[in-house]
Length: 383
Image (tube, rainbow, N blue to C red; front, side, top):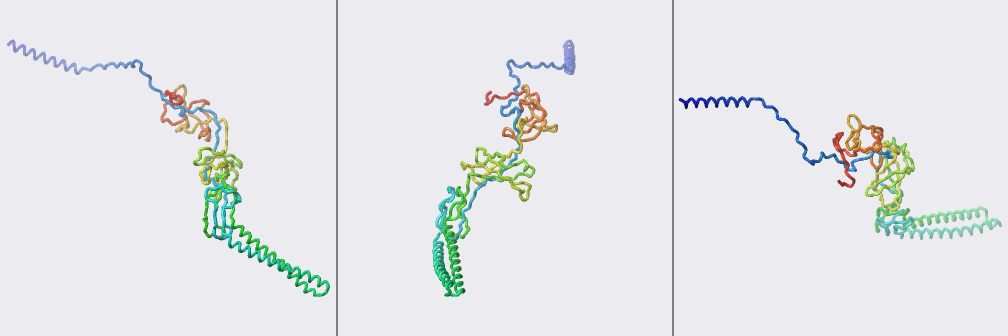
């Protein structure tokens, strides 16, 4: 009986214990307090945004120029084509492409055999005409004496005088014919009309050419010219003698030309007016046909506060720039003016919103937040 009573007591105690445990588990628990972790000793502060020196530009006054961009191919101011003035076989061509020639230098010869024979024939005709003139002159003089003495009639004298006039005319005609064939003989020798370089050789020895056939092209490279079309709206700002900065494809150094002529009419099918820019080429570094770009200065204003175009940003609220002020990024709205070239790069005039000497982020670095700490890396990339 005692054993059974103890078993019942143990069972009752177990039920009470289980009930107490369930009640404790269902009771709401108080939240745990959060204690911020202290930074580790010697830990470095958050890193600042770093810019390279070339990514920053200092706002300063520059000479702002409005430029007109022109382009085209260079051509020679002096260009001559040597043509055959008479028909015949080419006996020799004395120069080839790329060789230099002097003005008046013999460059080719046409076979002169036929023309030498024509000269001999014309000279014989002239000698015969002169002999006939001599006979006619003596006859006229003799008849003049006879008519004065009354031995012949006046009509007979007039006939002799007419024969004299005809003989003299025949001499003049024969002299003209000789001059013509002499010129043709001289034309068998072809000479360079200008000094320069041979650019094209059209004929070879042994070819039979008609008159007025091309043999050589000669160009003088001392002066070259660029023809460019200027819009009619800008032509009023272009003047003869105006300096032009030029760059030529394949050449490292810049060149300077000047406006030498302005066409009085617009180009057919456009409202552009051809302008001719000439540049000296004493060392013959440039060649005909090279592509050239020219910058014609339409207007120039010194002391203009202007920034590179890449530094200006725009959104719905207008234009703005990012500056570095006190080691932090600052967004500053600006009012812009005319565009142009300053310091050999495209720039935009800043009318207001920025002071001279301000450090401005030159390049687009993406989204920048005002107040972000920044540093500028030392020149040369040293840390």
